Length: 410
Image (cartoon, rainbow, N blue to C red; front, side, top):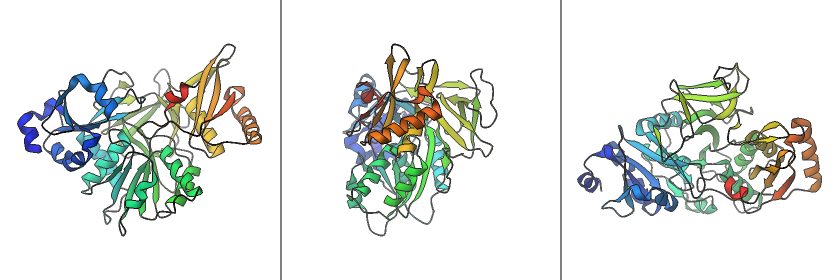
């Protein structure tokens, strides 16, 4: 394959080679050799293909396309956020990915050839990272397109596995164990959870599913990769300790540094930071080598990071700005339910009102008590108008909640 590509595309800095999902086995075989030959790579699904259609060129290999772009170094293209119809392309150099791999390597025993397990569609950042992390250690990963339980059936005896999950994925396995659809699985020895806030309560429940696993959670965006990492022993409400060689500044609206434990906008400087977006977007800002995607939080004196929400996930209620992400985390912890979401809809007198979408039925008495606790903690602006039972939870292909699908019901 490499010789065919080199013959057709002699200049590796002029395109990215994108693999369709039907060509996943080709990707797993040839991704590293192509990167080592200075080519850039990525994966794509049908919707992404439609989005990039006019820039794609067919290659001699079925299921592999070329995307024309000028690059200064071999890179990897992944996709993040968005909806099922719109995706944000994130381009990072292979060198920056290698820095992230090295960071993960600090927590993996070199004596074990852990085999990676990836859940979710390969084009998306967490899935692609998990697959590439395993490949660069010389171990071909298992790739599954969803959270289904079937991967338990194909695990080899006397083999240890490294599992990459989102918190929504975790909730499916926790529920499956409660319903006795699965039994505890001991061949999973290391787990990394990313993509959203992961609570201590959920970690405890996931430990019942994978009793021998060391469970790490991490915080970061596709633009920055790892910002902080939380060890299995960390019981704080943080998203972990800021990673080595990563600088995080917390600044106010005037871009002035704020002291420890005071909330502000997070700015990140790291050799893991991305190069640019594919497509037209202004989802970040840059200043003096730091980038921000408008996450809000604070840093304590022990260098732990606390996430509070994202600028786009706010609502004004009776003159008060409410951070939906922060409030959502509170409700998830009180109910110990991951598939839960807060949405705001327009209201003539209060500007907006809150709706709570939830995947599990709750008793009226529980709902009444929860509203009282929310009012005591946040005031009237933190109390949802009503809750909506949503047993069939809408998910994006990257393993996260599809807020737009929920929003269509608001």
